[in-house]
Image (spheres, rainbow, N blue to C red):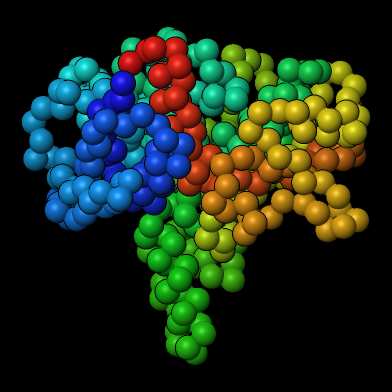
Length: 338
Ligand SMILES: NC(=O)c1ccc[n+]([C@@H]2O[C@H](COP(=O)([O-])OP(=O)(O)OC[C@H]3O[C@@H](n4cnc5c(N)ncnc54)[C@H](OP(=O)(O)O)[C@@H]3O)[C@@H](O)[C@H]2O)c1
């Protein structure tokens, strides 16, 4: 038996990845409904060789008959429509930040806290992309010896800010190549071509950005560990796909880099690429399009004792968004929770 699945935000970067990932993983879809804004009404997208028309979300009054709704249309749409889909009988898996810290809503990464899906009341939140890849890499180490502190710097691609930010980088680079004046930043806070920007999302009262605070708050929620400390600096870089992270952790017990490497080699969803002498370490352009989280440069940290540092790279649109959400749908199927 298959499911009637809806994608809300189907024309966006994450929405289009949903179509690919559902097909590649052969998720049991009986019917697929695609929603976006009025701008995209009538556009056709392909799923398993079939053309499906996009419907304008605001023109639909009832969502009954949908079993699973994958949302990626931003927070305000999620706040307004996720409860409507849920009350009409669907389980919503939401990619925005709207519900992530709601105590009634499980926040789930299948490699980290799969059992939390069982607590759902109609809405399940998909975490922030940077937090997902960090925790897939750190959870096996957390389980082995414990982690008390995490210091992370991110190098986040423009696709993390949606389709418009990808075009912004393309247009700036094209103008530079043609010797023209580069267009002003519109979707990112500063010019991104040939630059790095230490701001993702808005600043909060304590001087950290919302993106940085997500890495702390979402980590605590998923690990069920209100004591763990996370200090993040989130930076946008001129890369199209793939977020990279330099992570240092303070451990609660001894663990050598060799032991960590062995643990991570056996961990679900993790690929270790770690032979610096051979220039083997994960890089965004090689990880784009993959579903796993790649880890390299695993060393003894020189600041934390005992501690480890590592380099973690994943495709933000796939494991950071679409793949993780489809894996949550697979858990719902596995546990018969739809
Ligand atoms: N990109 C990432 O790495 C990433 C990772 C994790 C989570 N997310 C989250 O996923 C969401 C979407 O991200 P994205 O990168 O896919 O953005 P995007 O490329 O800008 O796509 C946005 C989607 O939302 C739709 N939309 C916008 N306004 C709408 C409205 N009023 N009614 C219905 N649909 C509307 C758009 O439809 P139109 O084409 O018709 O405008 C489009 O399908 C965001 O909440 C983002 O924070 C993104």
